[in-house]
Image 1: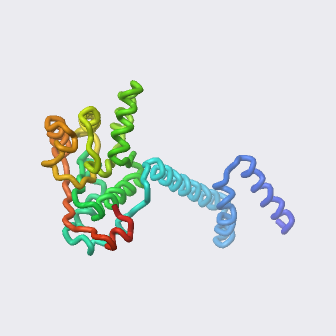
Image 2: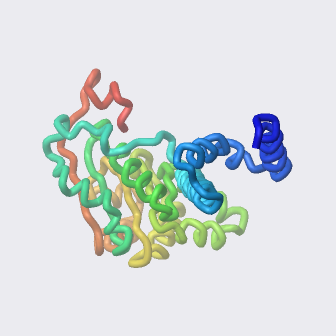
Length: 255
């Protein structure tokens, strides 16, 4: 094949991919040609390389979509977390959580500590790992969750909303206790936790001791029922550090 024939064939391939609206194929065509040329590959070897690259991009796109749909306000990972600033944390324990075995076992995780010590960062990092491993994952602030459930209740869509939230392999409820929850909303929270009980995993970040949850929820009976279900199969991570103004965590925007 002379240069002119080569160029015509190359352009034809690009036209075909454009017609098929295959942006992925267009993005790797030169890479596939380079591979076959450098390795003096047969057609079948070149096509195998092309198909592998397409599968790789498909997998990456699925991962990116899963992370996007999880609703994280920011993408965090454990490599960004400086454990030297929180000596009370057991890094090996956090690394173990990041293996996601707790998700397979349907266990819960509670990160408890003062504001600014890294609870949200750790919860997000583990959640991102779960989403990247194609576990259905959803992150939501507690106040927003309560508003969403209450709105669904008013619109007679509560059953549908609870079904959706109960289906996630990992649900992350951030900032529990930062705002009081009235009894009506506390009952909705109980219904959600009860539906997920012993089925799927929930991560909760909070600055409120369990002994004070009845004050936040406005009803000791509901509070005890929620705590019983959350703690039955759970890991409680207490972070005893502080994050004064100007600290590492304030600078790094770890909540």
